[in-house]
Length: 131
Image: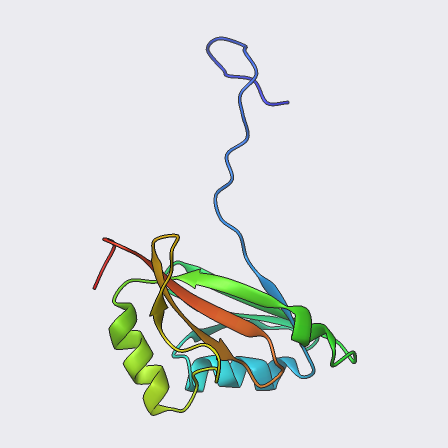
């Protein structure tokens, strides 16, 4: 356990951020979808493993031959101006058929997108944090 330099007392770990790792059949194709359709930027591509980034969000992809894994994989991405983002993605026909934009009882507005592998991406805005 880490110790405070001045007091010598144990300090708690600080969790800086999480990075979702999504299963995909083809890392390059996944990166292209996120860049071309979701407007992320490529972070890296190491063949079997790659990633994209937009603002403070980073998402990684790992290659697998098991196509069923993505059916059970998802990530939540907190955003601002969700209505603007929703309109842009809707114009590209990206909205999940059962994931239209809606307010939730837990204080968010959300919508869902499926990537080509079937990973479910939920875009979330906390009330009072943007639009």
